[in-house]
Amino acid sequence: MKTFSRALALAFLALFGASVAAETFEGTLDLWIATVAQNTNATGYMKGPHFKILPKTALKMDGGVEGYPMLNFETLKMTLVAPTDKYFLDLPMASLQTPIDKAVVKYKKSGKTDTLGGHPAEEWVLDDPASPYSINLWTTKDFAPSVNFLISVQKSVPNEGLILGRMGKDLVAQGYFPIKAEAKDAKGTVTVAMLVSNITPKKLDDKEFVIPDGFIKMSEFLKKKKGAKP
Image (tube, rainbow, N blue to C red; front, side):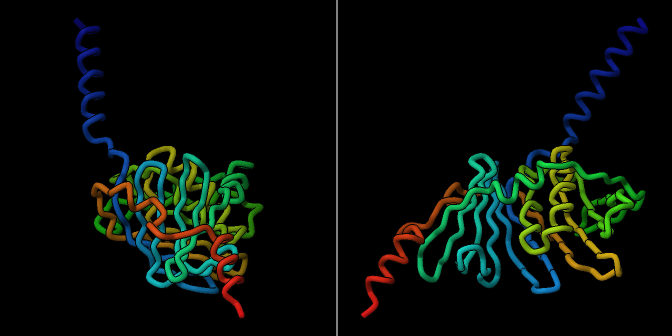
Protein backbone atom coordinates (compact mmCIF):
# COMPACT_ATOMS: atom_id res chain seq x y z
CA MET A 1 0.00 0.00 0.00
CA LYS A 2 2.81 2.40 0.87
CA THR A 3 4.49 1.64 -2.44
CA PHE A 4 1.25 2.32 -4.32
CA SER A 5 0.63 5.57 -2.40
CA ARG A 6 4.17 6.76 -3.07
CA ALA A 7 3.86 5.95 -6.78
CA LEU A 8 0.52 7.77 -6.92
CA ALA A 9 2.03 10.81 -5.21
CA LEU A 10 4.98 10.88 -7.60
CA ALA A 11 2.64 10.58 -10.57
CA PHE A 12 0.57 13.50 -9.24
CA LEU A 13 3.66 15.63 -8.76
CA ALA A 14 4.89 14.83 -12.24
CA LEU A 15 1.51 15.74 -13.71
CA PHE A 16 1.30 18.94 -11.67
CA GLY A 17 4.87 19.88 -12.61
CA ALA A 18 4.16 19.36 -16.28
CA SER A 19 1.06 21.53 -16.08
CA VAL A 20 2.86 24.52 -14.59
CA ALA A 21 6.05 24.30 -16.65
CA ALA A 22 6.42 27.25 -19.00
CA GLU A 23 6.10 26.42 -22.67
CA THR A 24 8.87 27.40 -25.07
CA PHE A 25 8.27 31.06 -25.83
CA GLU A 26 7.15 32.34 -29.20
CA GLY A 27 6.29 36.01 -29.60
CA THR A 28 7.69 39.50 -29.20
CA LEU A 29 9.47 41.47 -26.51
CA ASP A 30 10.63 45.04 -26.03
CA LEU A 31 14.39 45.20 -25.60
CA TRP A 32 16.47 48.08 -24.26
CA ILE A 33 20.26 47.92 -24.16
CA ALA A 34 22.47 50.78 -23.01
CA THR A 35 26.25 51.04 -23.22
CA VAL A 36 28.66 53.91 -22.76
CA ALA A 37 28.49 54.48 -26.52
CA GLN A 38 24.76 54.24 -27.26
CA ASN A 39 21.22 53.33 -26.21
CA THR A 40 19.18 50.93 -28.31
CA ASN A 41 15.43 50.37 -28.15
CA ALA A 42 14.16 47.46 -30.21
CA THR A 43 11.49 44.84 -30.63
CA GLY A 44 12.67 41.25 -30.48
CA TYR A 45 10.92 38.49 -32.42
CA MET A 46 11.49 34.94 -31.13
CA LYS A 47 10.36 31.68 -32.67
CA GLY A 48 12.13 28.33 -32.49
CA PRO A 49 15.78 28.83 -33.53
CA HIS A 50 15.07 32.31 -34.86
CA PHE A 51 15.57 35.71 -33.23
CA LYS A 52 15.17 39.05 -35.00
CA ILE A 53 16.06 42.42 -33.48
CA LEU A 54 14.13 45.28 -35.05
CA PRO A 55 15.52 48.57 -33.61
CA LYS A 56 13.57 51.81 -33.47
CA THR A 57 16.40 53.38 -35.47
CA ALA A 58 18.76 51.54 -37.83
CA LEU A 59 21.81 50.00 -36.18
CA LYS A 60 25.31 50.36 -37.62
CA MET A 61 26.52 46.78 -37.97
CA ASP A 62 29.31 44.71 -39.54
CA GLY A 63 30.33 45.58 -43.07
CA GLY A 64 28.92 49.08 -42.79
CA VAL A 65 25.36 47.74 -42.91
CA GLU A 66 22.72 50.00 -41.37
CA GLY A 67 19.61 48.06 -40.50
CA TYR A 68 18.68 45.08 -38.35
CA PRO A 69 20.02 41.56 -37.62
CA MET A 70 18.32 38.16 -37.85
CA LEU A 71 19.91 35.23 -36.00
CA ASN A 72 19.35 31.59 -36.84
CA PHE A 73 20.60 29.33 -34.03
CA GLU A 74 19.98 26.20 -36.11
CA THR A 75 22.10 27.13 -39.12
CA LEU A 76 24.35 29.38 -36.97
CA LYS A 77 23.96 32.15 -39.50
CA MET A 78 23.44 35.86 -38.91
CA THR A 79 21.78 37.93 -41.61
CA LEU A 80 22.16 41.71 -41.60
CA VAL A 81 19.35 43.45 -43.47
CA ALA A 82 19.59 47.01 -44.83
CA PRO A 83 16.02 48.27 -45.51
CA THR A 84 17.03 51.62 -47.05
CA ASP A 85 19.19 50.19 -49.83
CA LYS A 86 17.40 46.81 -49.91
CA TYR A 87 20.33 44.46 -49.53
CA PHE A 88 21.47 41.83 -47.03
CA LEU A 89 24.69 40.29 -45.78
CA ASP A 90 25.02 36.73 -44.47
CA LEU A 91 27.65 36.08 -41.81
CA PRO A 92 28.55 33.01 -39.74
CA MET A 93 27.54 33.21 -36.07
CA ALA A 94 30.78 31.48 -35.08
CA SER A 95 32.33 34.80 -34.07
CA LEU A 96 29.58 35.10 -31.43
CA GLN A 97 28.95 31.48 -30.47
CA THR A 98 32.51 30.10 -30.36
CA PRO A 99 33.80 32.48 -27.63
CA ILE A 100 30.76 31.61 -25.49
CA ASP A 101 31.29 27.87 -25.92
CA LYS A 102 35.03 28.04 -25.13
CA ALA A 103 34.58 28.39 -21.38
CA VAL A 104 32.06 28.22 -18.58
CA VAL A 105 31.33 30.99 -16.13
CA LYS A 106 30.78 30.75 -12.39
CA TYR A 107 27.63 32.39 -11.06
CA LYS A 108 25.17 31.92 -8.22
CA LYS A 109 21.79 33.04 -6.94
CA SER A 110 22.03 36.17 -4.83
CA GLY A 111 18.88 35.31 -2.91
CA LYS A 112 17.14 38.48 -4.09
CA THR A 113 13.71 38.28 -5.71
CA ASP A 114 11.47 40.91 -7.25
CA THR A 115 8.55 41.43 -9.60
CA LEU A 116 9.70 42.87 -12.93
CA GLY A 117 7.20 43.78 -15.61
CA GLY A 118 4.60 41.80 -13.70
CA HIS A 119 6.73 38.66 -13.62
CA PRO A 120 8.34 37.04 -10.55
CA ALA A 121 12.11 37.28 -10.96
CA GLU A 122 15.26 36.16 -9.19
CA GLU A 123 18.77 37.53 -9.37
CA TRP A 124 21.94 35.71 -10.42
CA VAL A 125 25.38 37.23 -9.89
CA LEU A 126 28.84 36.54 -11.24
CA ASP A 127 30.80 34.41 -8.78
CA ASP A 128 34.38 35.01 -9.90
CA PRO A 129 36.63 36.99 -7.51
CA ALA A 130 39.32 37.24 -10.22
CA SER A 131 37.02 39.09 -12.61
CA PRO A 132 37.24 42.91 -12.71
CA TYR A 133 33.50 43.01 -13.42
CA SER A 134 30.45 42.65 -11.23
CA ILE A 135 27.43 41.35 -13.12
CA ASN A 136 23.86 40.64 -12.15
CA LEU A 137 21.22 38.99 -14.28
CA TRP A 138 17.55 38.76 -13.41
CA THR A 139 15.43 35.95 -14.84
CA THR A 140 11.86 34.71 -14.72
CA LYS A 141 10.39 31.28 -15.26
CA ASP A 142 7.08 32.60 -16.57
CA PHE A 143 8.48 31.95 -20.05
CA ALA A 144 11.05 29.50 -21.43
CA PRO A 145 13.09 31.21 -24.16
CA SER A 146 13.92 29.22 -27.28
CA VAL A 147 17.33 30.88 -27.82
CA ASN A 148 20.06 32.71 -25.91
CA PHE A 149 19.41 36.23 -27.17
CA LEU A 150 22.18 37.58 -24.91
CA ILE A 151 24.70 36.15 -27.37
CA SER A 152 25.08 39.46 -29.21
CA VAL A 153 25.77 41.74 -26.21
CA GLN A 154 29.49 41.00 -26.69
CA LYS A 155 29.35 43.01 -29.94
CA SER A 156 28.89 46.18 -27.89
CA VAL A 157 30.96 45.30 -24.82
CA PRO A 158 33.30 42.36 -25.63
CA ASN A 159 34.42 41.35 -22.13
CA GLU A 160 31.40 41.74 -19.89
CA GLY A 161 29.12 40.98 -22.84
CA LEU A 162 30.85 37.63 -23.24
CA ILE A 163 30.26 36.85 -19.56
CA LEU A 164 26.59 37.75 -19.91
CA GLY A 165 26.37 35.56 -23.00
CA ARG A 166 27.82 32.60 -21.09
CA MET A 167 25.47 33.15 -18.15
CA GLY A 168 22.60 33.43 -20.60
CA LYS A 169 23.55 30.18 -22.32
CA ASP A 170 23.45 28.23 -19.04
CA LEU A 171 20.29 29.81 -17.66
CA VAL A 172 18.33 29.61 -20.91
CA ALA A 173 19.19 25.91 -21.05
CA GLN A 174 17.56 25.61 -17.62
CA GLY A 175 14.38 27.34 -18.82
CA TYR A 176 15.05 30.81 -17.38
CA PHE A 177 14.11 33.91 -19.35
CA PRO A 178 16.59 36.83 -18.91
CA ILE A 179 14.72 40.08 -18.31
CA LYS A 180 17.23 42.47 -16.73
CA ALA A 181 21.01 42.73 -16.52
CA GLU A 182 23.73 45.14 -15.48
CA ALA A 183 27.52 44.99 -15.60
CA LYS A 184 29.98 47.24 -13.77
CA ASP A 185 33.71 47.60 -14.17
CA ALA A 186 36.31 47.66 -11.38
CA LYS A 187 35.51 51.32 -10.69
CA GLY A 188 31.82 50.59 -10.24
CA THR A 189 30.85 52.25 -13.52
CA VAL A 190 27.92 50.65 -15.34
CA THR A 191 29.23 49.59 -18.73
CA VAL A 192 26.13 47.83 -20.04
CA ALA A 193 22.53 47.54 -18.92
CA MET A 194 19.68 45.56 -20.43
CA LEU A 195 15.94 45.45 -19.81
CA VAL A 196 13.29 43.24 -21.40
CA SER A 197 9.68 44.36 -21.08
CA ASN A 198 6.26 43.73 -22.63
CA ILE A 199 6.91 40.05 -23.24
CA THR A 200 4.01 39.04 -25.47
CA PRO A 201 3.42 35.38 -26.35
CA LYS A 202 1.82 35.03 -29.79
CA LYS A 203 2.14 33.05 -32.99
CA LEU A 204 4.56 34.59 -35.46
CA ASP A 205 4.50 34.12 -39.21
CA ASP A 206 7.62 32.44 -40.61
CA LYS A 207 7.88 35.42 -42.98
CA GLU A 208 9.17 37.48 -40.06
CA PHE A 209 12.47 35.64 -40.38
CA VAL A 210 13.06 35.63 -44.13
CA ILE A 211 14.74 38.24 -46.30
CA PRO A 212 12.14 40.67 -47.71
CA ASP A 213 11.20 40.32 -51.38
CA GLY A 214 13.33 42.35 -53.77
CA PHE A 215 16.39 42.48 -51.50
CA ILE A 216 19.74 41.46 -53.03
CA LYS A 217 23.08 40.36 -51.62
CA MET A 218 25.40 43.12 -50.46
CA SER A 219 28.01 42.08 -53.05
CA GLU A 220 25.48 42.51 -55.86
CA PHE A 221 24.38 45.86 -54.46
CA LEU A 222 27.96 47.14 -54.38
CA LYS A 223 28.54 46.00 -57.98
CA LYS A 224 25.42 47.83 -59.14
CA LYS A 225 26.38 50.92 -57.18
CA LYS A 226 29.90 50.88 -58.62
CA GLY A 227 28.53 50.40 -62.15
CA ALA A 228 26.14 53.31 -61.74
CA LYS A 229 28.95 55.78 -61.05
CA PRO A 230 29.81 58.11 -63.97
